[in-house]
Structure formats: structure tokens, C-alpha cells
Image (cartoon, rainbow, N blue to C red; front, side, top):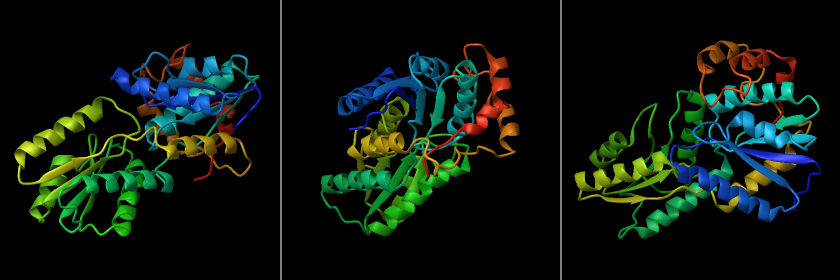
Length: 307
């Protein structure tokens, strides 16, 4: 059991226009609290929700001497690299007596690989002819304009290829970047795949999960000779709870490095483009506070769990 006196743990989810997706993160927090009843656990979202970053940080700071902010996100793109550090710096300015610590995002490491492998194993068992030589695999990510975030998924695709006997293991995205799911399916079918396993890399449900289901249904109608198997999101798997445990235990240790892009001289230019007046990045005091907080020395205090 983890017990941190006067510490509040704040899970920062991405947020979804689909209320059910945000509700699932709240349910995750409930289950996590049940595992650690002595630990105060709060939830906020980066966008598309009632409690956004600024309010979440303020609420967590109430009655706490330390706030551990955990980006409850698989891939580090603009949200993790710019919006979270900016919001955190502004919160430090509002609450100078509170020690704010931020961990790394969940990432797509070996723990997530284990989950995805289990998802793939389940899909293969569901097929009438589970032959990896004729079954293509498609790892389906959210998609980002950040090459590093997309690269995290590409690494896992290689792991899946090396750990299994499938002729084809490919990467596709639901938006922002390419290739898209339909294009990769067409390619795999041209190369002789008669079955396709699609594994979405999503923690919780949302608009995109529903979109994926609709896409796969259209593909089934377009290619009736091909068997499609689709797995679901996996935010309640044991590995996810274990990752949060590990982030909480290691938060603030001297061995931690910096958060994604902390100390990078190019981030200031990127922030000028990225941190415009989003509803999900504005603080209570408005964009002016954010602009000042970004350049505050306090923003250099960010620490995180090592990769």
C-alpha cells in the first residue's frame, strides 16, 4: 500500500467529447483509491471536460503540501511537452507553499507491450484459422504531429513483429498523420493476408474508439472475404495500475530526469504556436498568467520518473 502524508496525486487525462470516456478515467481513479485508501487521488483533464488542468491543480493543492501530477497519457506530444509544464508553472506561482512534482507520461514501454501482446493473443484465438502467416496485425494509434510520439508506437510495432510469427505487423493512425487504417488494410490484403487483427492503442473509450468500430464495420462490408478481429481499449488492465504505482513511488527522486522537452531552447518557439488561447490551456487568471509562468524559474523545477 502506498501512503504519502499530505500528498495529493493528480491524474491528468486527455479528456474526451464522449462523456463515457471521461467517466472511465473517474472509475479508474475510484479503483485506484480502493487499492490505496490512505492516498488522496484527484482527477483532471487537459480538454473536453468540466475539471481542466488549472482547476485540477488548484483543487489538489488545497490542504496538501505536495502535489504529484501524473500525465495519464500514453504518448508525449504537445499536451505533455508544453501544456502541462505551462499549467504547472502557473500553479506554482499561485501556490508557492505547495511542492508540485510532475512525473513522466505513461509511455509505451514493455508494460504496455505486454498488454498489447495479450490483446493480440486474444484476437488470434477468436479467429477460425489463427495462422500468423496469413494474418496481418495493425497497431492503431491516435496519431500526432509530434514525430517522437508516433515513434513510440513504431517501436512497439517492431517488438510485436519480433515476438510473433506474423508476416506483417504495421502501424496506422486514426488521425493527424498517416498511414490511416484503410490504407494499411488495403496493403495487407494485396500482400495476401486473409485475416487482419486490429489492436487500438487506447486507454479508455471515446469518440475515436467509436469511430474505429465504424471503420472496421465498413471494412468488413468492403472485404467480405477477409476476417477482421478488433480488440478494445485497455485502461483497466493490471499493468496500468502498476505503472501508476511506480510513478507515485518514484516521483521527485533525485535520479529522475526532466519532463519531455524541459530545458529545450526550441520549446519557447513551439509554445508560441501551440499555447494559443485553447479553452483547455487557459488558467483561471487568463493567458497573461500563462505567458509569465512559462518563463518563470519555477518551471525548471519539473522532475519525472526515468524512462
